[in-house]
Image 1 (tube, helix red, strand yellow):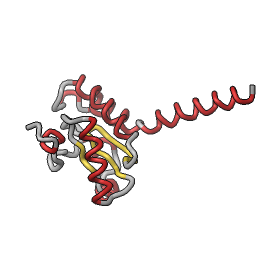
Image 2: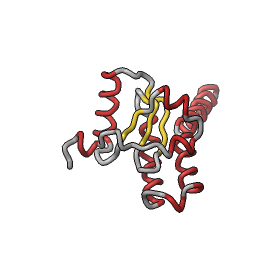
Image 3: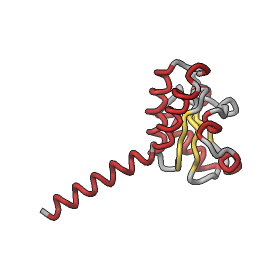
Length: 137
């Protein structure tokens, strides 16, 4: 009986952690669809699809947090901000999502942009799309 209770508690904690991990993915999608509905770059369904990619990105080992950008990119806050860690994360992401774009947020950007609205408005134009990295264009 004790093992059953412990297993149930572990499952509840894991479910709560998964929900918390994609909190900013959810918040950025909601902001885009509720506050920028008339000014979106993509159709609303595309942001629901991006939510799935964003949530999966948060589960990657070097990603601390993730957001959906208005232009369709995924912005991430890395756990380690080194060249090898960034390259490994980009490789993992592009292998999983070859048609997506991953934009790394710097510490300076995170400090100066305190709101979801400010983050989702950032451009992923400076990031190289996975299509180009994978040679699909």
